[in-house]
Length: 62
Length: 262
Image (cartoon, rainbow over all chains, first blue to last red; front, side, top):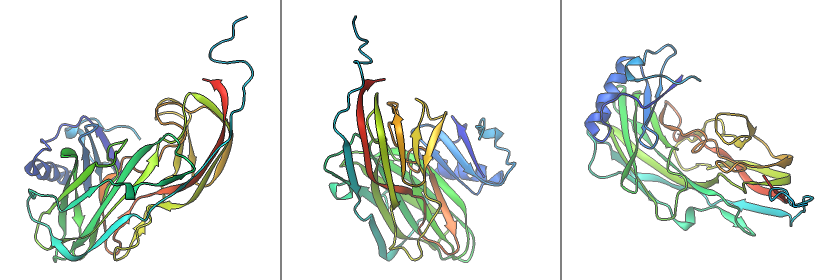
């Protein structure tokens, strides 16, 4: 299942350390993969149904 | 009595528009010597493509208004004995575009990055760089591919009649990886409003429409993967690489413009 969060609260993605830090945070809540878009400041997360992503922002409907 | 400038009398037909589009083979490279991914972000990209005229679809006898859309893929294999994470960063013309990871690339499994959220419109000379690294040793980059297709095609702010859209096959078709496998092809969107939140027709086969008045934002036809759906992910698979997303391929568009501004 894919989740989409606009304007997420996440580590700075301009460095590799920030990428790995976000990965660790998302993996801790069960994510299997994710992508962050600088253009629209949006985080998309793939993982099982029912993941709690509230620490990262508001998950969009649909 | 003065006529409304928005309706200049009875609709007058202009000449019929009928164009075809052909596509070059995607720019695919299976790497003869796989590249080992580092365990921290590299200073230089391992994958780099620059949009060139050789990548562009060919319109005949003329181009309709459209935007160019780039599609990039990179893939490889986790040859280690355990599950690892593959990380990526994509830059376009030196500016950050996306980051991400797949945390679940199993032992001896393949991974494929689908970078389908690149800037629209793209221009010849745009460069896309991909930086890849992994959470452990023995993850390889084995393959890369790049393609360009049109999106946001057609006129806007005029009504058009007897619209014909021919879909024939898919684009891109990747053949040079060890075991290519596409996901379900992306349908073309025919937006029926000025936003991307409202009513949309989806084309998954050739179709005709009697009359339509496209909105400016997305015009008559909008690609799914890469535009309507900005996929930015790495797929993991025990058997497939590249494991990739693509769209149905438009090969012909025909319509009759009406002298009816809307």
